[in-house]
Length: 384
Image: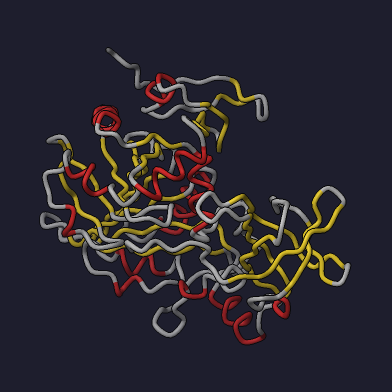
């Protein structure tokens, strides 16, 4: 059957702008995926159901179309040194084939986006360093302009591959076994947060052992026709197709931040519990450094915490949090955890109320329900 992989569009009633479609859109429709607008794209929110897809990833394997995400390639004689000025994490630690989860900051220390930077090493032909960055779909255009503006006079070449490549995430305890059928290289040799330039279905592929589910797994970047063939092959092998809904419940159980909800340009890494990304002792100057140093010296006034509902109710995004009857914060993300069977949430609260076991209340439709601050992550895979 011939499938059209050309970008199709439909009107987005929220923005009156056409929605983009990934190379895997037609396959999602064939599988009766429920399509919704997301960050300017028409994406499947679920196929068989959020809970069943969630459980497939936790117990076996699931796959996600993440082709909507931004894919940037870099090459230059001093790439690591140049890119180091854009992030607070020490990139000099990276060896070829390693990656770093990090953040782009504004001058006030606020998070412009969270990204993964992949260091590919030195090109044998040119002697220049090569790297990749995967950024969020909703911030892709802004990130592109921001990064490009800081690379203009550096000699680093910046290429946007977002429209040329497809991305598939294969996640779960059986992800390696299923994906290995289509990969020439031995996936067991790729360490967590490692990556290779390999071969999938006899075609070039970028393969990374990263993900957004809290499980072991891989994210692969290939040409669109290869993505279509790989998706169908994985489907035939029994890998469950999964949508945005399960991706959200999975990442929340693993306490992974969602940009635009849990972190944004008004939150700093220190407030968001991402201080482990800030390497002040080993990095040079970077955008936002002075603000981060000042905040570290004075202490943070609020902190992102994990919450567990006591009894009924689900704390959803933007629900108020109260202490002794006064509003002290708000929920950023919340759901019923399919794995734990409990309602969980992330929220910003004053630093003095952020200790584990702290009792608070959440307001849900005019009524208050007790919640407790708990240790993050809510769930941790035994395989990682």
